[in-house]
Image (cartoon, rainbow, N blue to C red; front, side, top):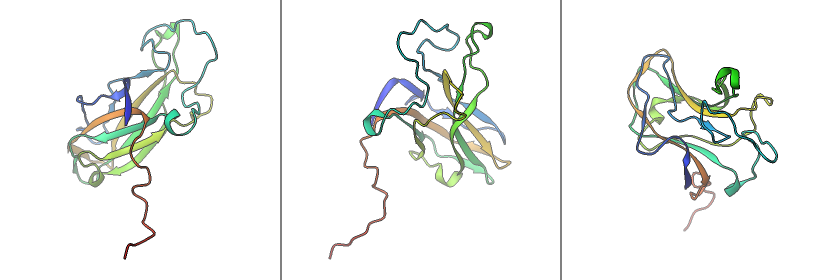
Length: 182
């Protein structure tokens, strides 16, 4: 997998704890700014065509994917499940200090059971998709993890959440086999 060190939500070596009370939320420590200036910074002049997050870059090596993995295995109290959501927010402009506006889910993986949250497990893999609603025009992206089911986790971390530029694993490795060797 090829990654860009500047395009990550949770870097390798700095896991995000997801231990908390029922219904707790945990935001990724890094917020991605499509303009590259950073949260709270005025955008510089842009020459050329404006693009939106989720613009179709093609297929394969030209289309980035989000890859979220578990660090420390989760220990759940009761039937607690996890939701991982990629969220976008518009820029509030000069009056709002160039901060993110209301966060909106663009894509999510809901109801991930604790049994699936083992160390090293990939819990969410998603290609960049068109933003929904279609007129969102987000400048900022983040990840939000939410505990649900009325219970909590007593152990567990998100090990990393990276944007992969090219995946080198075989995508069909989990496909059912349709032959045998005698």
